[in-house]
Length: 169
Image (cartoon, rainbow, N blue to C red; front, side, top):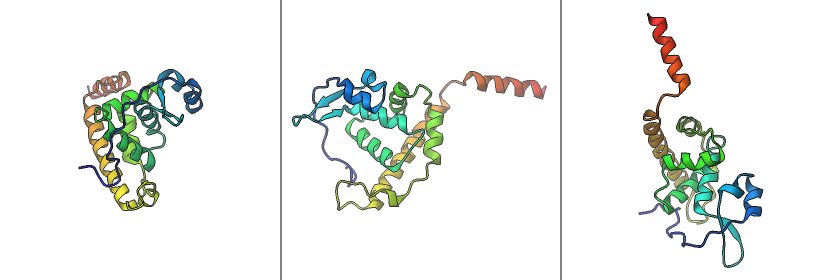
């Protein structure tokens, strides 16, 4: 059962079309990477995957309550978007994004219940939104730890291990 402040409806399958001017205004590479669709009232919005790409790329530097809340909503709309997919999407904008960097950002983020007053449902209190965000953050951290443990040692890490072995004997 979805949490009280999460959307209970699935996004309708709408046709996606590129609108370079809209995406160019958000980020120079998004006009090449992202997709948008136009609502019946002529408002152009990014696709769910494009939103996930932008929010994932923002996490290492910003990791705010609203970013996590938006990502929580996105992952509820498309359950195939988990930690590993978020990294892949974020790397489309920020090629240096890694599981370790995202883990550091999530673990070190100083989130505040007081900053969680952005639910569109006025009956949903900040406390409920904050609890959802914290649970989502915990889940992401667990997934990222698992990912990081299974990634190959980077070249610098291998060099450090080799130096340590040389020092020991």
